[in-house]
Image (spheres, protein in one colour):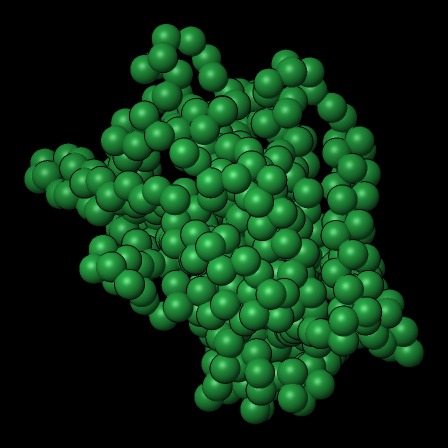
Length: 421
Ligand code: NAD
């Protein structure tokens, strides 16, 4: 290992590398291809200076990591969060490579972020961060190079600012530089709900195969942002009983089930699930230990660990978030017979519809929502069924099967393209 590679090695990056190493051994992956895939292709560290509303100047560290470009341009979100680091962004970029490959999308993985406290910042401060960060990484992004998207604490508005900044630099409108934009500036129908819709879709498909005897499966969800709330909405619609939900401020519990549309209206008015009158308050850390059928971590990474995994009672864990289950916890859950839908499959709906948005932007031809939802379901169903079939054929867990498919396609393409020069 070289000195510079050490910069990547935080817990999240080690976890992503360990998942790759395990699957490489199992697949007899070519040693050269394996070594190349253990490290990002390119990483950019930038300083993002902005003037705060109080008149002072503050400098925030920003990152963009491009893990691989074998199958096409890089693709991945941008997050604003106080825990953003090079290692975390690099791990997320690697997972994006496997996710895009697994879903048969013509992309490699990337991720970016700015280390800041978005919840304490005004809209104006957030806009200045987004625009200055875009300016700093501008030579590295573009519709043919690297296409950012929203992630934690970034949204449609952030993408509109990025698109506008990039377009001003090149002198004409370039909607295809980011996805997850508002529809009026070249976004697509169906993008806002795509990830949660995909999470609910894979849960239903998994439960049909693993536990067809359960008529009304019970669910606990950590996180009620974009992914958690939309997953809850579609699972509720499908007849699942959502008994517990948490967000950053606390957790609520209702044995008889939470009326999700009603809770959504409450959160819209109050900004949090906390205080919802038709449920009881509970300790947020207990959400992982409830006797439910399905557990959906849809907030942050590293929340199901070796410490709490022995107390998980769910039959199925669906990774709405990226990296919520650590490798040690994964082994404990497997030994208890808990099935896990890995994030690279479970939360892939967002990047699938982002891909549709990019295609529409390039063609300047837009599709109706019904067409998008149908195409999303088709791609998610194919990826799920491929993973499930390989899991049965090779007698491996779903994460290993998903990784084998994701890594396998990239490795095959790498071998065919050869090593430059
Ligand atoms: P978001 O910002 O919309 O929502 C995050 C939610 O998590 C909020 O409800 C917040 O209160 C809650 N939260 C934060 N910290 C928490 C904690 N410690 N305990 C409990 N709740 C906590 O973010 P999002 O877009 O829903 O993303 C959630 C996760 O899903 C992230 O890991 C993200 O990388 C992943 N993801 C998102 C997308 C997407 O399209 N948005 C796609 C793939 C994966």
